[in-house]
Every structure is written in C-alpha cells, then in structure tokens.
Length: 107
Image (cartoon, rainbow, N blue to C red; front, top):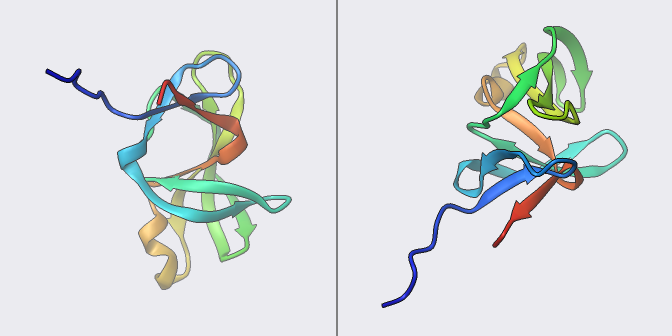
C-alpha cells in the first residue's frame, strides 16, 4: 500500500514555519515590488500582521496590512483589507506571499 500524501505546505524562507497550503492558492500571476513573482492565497497561517495602511498598488488604491512570519518576523507579503475599485473586491481578505519568501516544505 502506498504512503498517504499529506498536504503540500509552504514555509517561511527564513525559519521554515508553515505559512500556507498549496491548495489555497487563488492566483500565481501576482507581482510584488521590483517585478518579483507572488501568489495570492485565500488563507494563510502562522503569520502576524502590521497596521492597516492605504497603499497605491499596480491595480489601484487598497487598504492593506503587511504580513510577517509569526515565528521569526520575516516580511512575507501583504493582506488586502479593502479594495476601492469594484473590480478588485475579490482580493479582500486574501493574502499575497512573495514567491522567494516562501519555500516548499518536503514536496
């Protein structure tokens, strides 16, 4: 009998704290500052958030909070709290993690 395969987890690049599940990726086509690839997740775990701030991003004005690893405080990305453009509302309550800030955990 084959071994059961567990969930595919992403971890913090610095301390390997589990921060997201592969199955929770909504989009892989996001871009962070400096043309770095990023993923949009419906849920994340083991993260701390900063204060809410209004920030003008590529897609317009949003209220966001920066997201950090809850163990080592490595900056990982940001969470959309509010989108002012109706077409961007789907991002609300979702989190962007910068690809080079997260690593696959044993998969």
